[in-house]
Image (cartoon, rainbow, N blue to C red; front, side):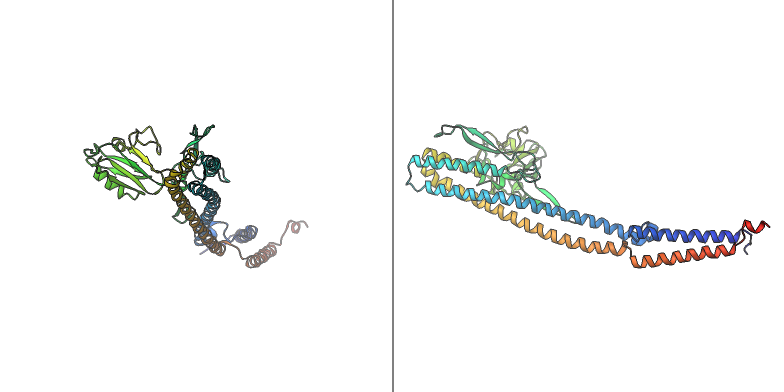
Length: 414
């Protein structure tokens, strides 16, 4: 049973008017933003879907940008590598010419002048900087000069020449997310791209009686390897070979020292992460020295970079040593050119994969935008029709209320 009062009709009319005004305002707000959902209460279920779709769309667009950035970097890097390959081909031509035995010592010295200039161009390419200002071949240490040239006196030259080239970068890889939880590993270590030979490290220290005094950890080619208390040198060699690093460890049958060699053209990267296992075996210096130039003083190293090979060719030409040119130097040049070609092919393959990632993410973004449009976009035709109907209902309500309360103050002035 409801109680009827004199204010009931007025209250009901006012309530209906406010409700109609709220609906008209909501419709106007939707038309103004062109969005069907302006508040979560407009459609809670669709709003939940919309938030997830928009979040996913943002991530997909970021993946596409990451892949596009990678393709730009690969293109620039490949250009410098191709130019370096042309330089090495010219160096090899000079080496073959100088090794045929028909040229005099003065002719070889003249050839050495061109080889020296080609060496400078090769160092310049290795120290190239991309459009973003980052070093292209310094690993993750992108704000440094990848290779430092050391000048010195060379026999047969009256002026100082480049005597040694040292790598200042890292061997760490950059991982870039190009899809949901999918990463593209990018390696741009210069001491792998511009290396000529497999590097070998021979320890002169007898390790037959060596045992690990405690748990420790070493890093070989960037791969961390744990050493347990009591491990001997044979167990250590087995752990290194099973680690997945691109090296092979052996025990010298004569010196019983631990020898380590890379399985492809690259520079060895050894470090005692915790403990002193490698130092005790005579392979590296103390922890104050950082790789790759922390090799122990008593250890012997063979296998150099492209720069070492070109320097050796230049020096042999200055000395007139045709035997060295046609033997070790020419073999090292062939190995270095093959390694450079391998890295160019790898860069091209990564470029193609990044291009595929761009196309896939572009298609995914388009499909996701359709989902966002379905859940959140406003049907303009339907919205205008609803707005006109609401305005008509509102005006009708006002007209009805005006007729119900037609009495005014003028009716009492008689």
